[in-house]
Length: 296
Image 1: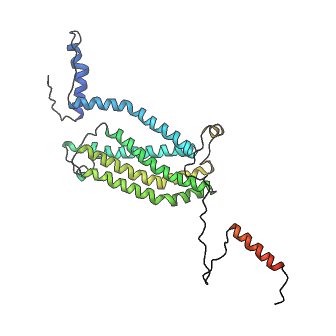
Image 2: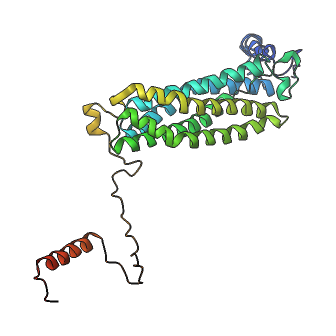
Image 3: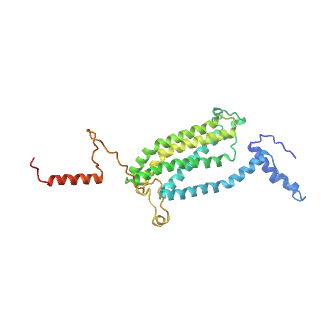
């Protein structure tokens, strides 16, 4: 049997109609007759998909946060760094989802992105928030790791945590800003397409990448500075369990490249002034000073 609703296929009323048919209409008809009834179609498919994704979304978020926390703890030997990274990235993702809701569900600026919809509303596809979270968390965490690794490198060279944050930000800010602007332009180009779902990805991803880049170069250094000497520290039991991983290669001894021998003005080769050459030159000078003067 085909049932054609009066409202649009993507409207809330049609989605509610699917639930009414399943819960109230079919059971009295099929319950005692040995007949099973199902509701299909595009709207019912999206309703089922949204329900399935909504039930698994908290597990996905917790899994990603837990794995990120573990890996960052091992990489930077700190509890405050992964905690700050998780909070910062969740804030940027939540802000992007808020902008997505305001544009498509509330209709703020739909005409600016080339969409004209009945009632100035476009329903957000159920899989868009899940895909946005996965992509955005990976990108924003990438910016975070790049900045903190620079800070850790300067701290390993002997700088105090506050000075290390300043030095690391000076070394990484332009790279993070450039990377964020590039990805912002890439995702913003999705808005040019005519497909509403692709436009949703473009608005959400572009907004989140821009916010993540701003937060990494502004909010993250401020929070890391407030942590002070506790920035790269682990409690005693964790310090013994967590393996040591040299992210920046700070434990590798620097390689000294010998300089090419210089040439005197008369074309002769200058004496070697390396460690052995210096000793030899001093020895020759000492012998010359101790020898008696010649008659000539």
